[in-house]
Image 1 (cartoon, rainbow, N blue to C red):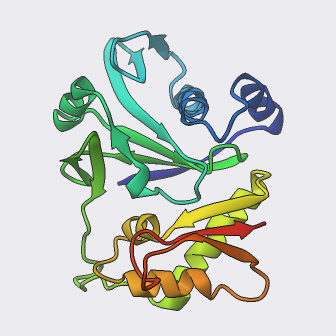
Image 2 (cartoon, helix red, strand yellow; image 1 turned 45 degrees about the vertical axis):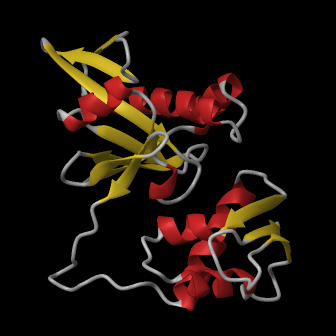
Length: 225
């Protein structure tokens, strides 16, 4: 996958946030992501012309060539695969036929990372109520990828909490099943649940609900930030 760091001036970011102020609402995050993507491509092409197109998040023309993209934004500091969903059949078909997907992480920060993902290389589409975007897990240097340790999962959770803190949230509720999916773990829910409950004395938390034995996909913990 292609990956680029994109920086935006604070003044420009504040103007966009005034238009889309609710960072807890998917529609505002999505609309902000489209505007960020426009600024990203404006820096790449001097003669860009944006076009309104049906069933496409972002469409533009450069030197007579039409480009189309599906845009997905997140306030998380990682791709957050488990949150990537495709609702439209038209979008599904376009992605399978080669339209790239842009994933922008750290939405709401001046420094964001933009990933350009392609069907068949970086993800597949798994049909549920909507289509889930599932990462194609590839070996690194010929080695098989293993489940992360409890320590690594703790680090991931702490990063999620810090990201929420930067966004001004006072608390954050996490679910074990979501973390398990985002980290692409295999049958390792005890690791996730243990990590969630053992972050350390600096992380005050409350168990909202949990499975009978305390280990499963439905462990919900509220962290006070």
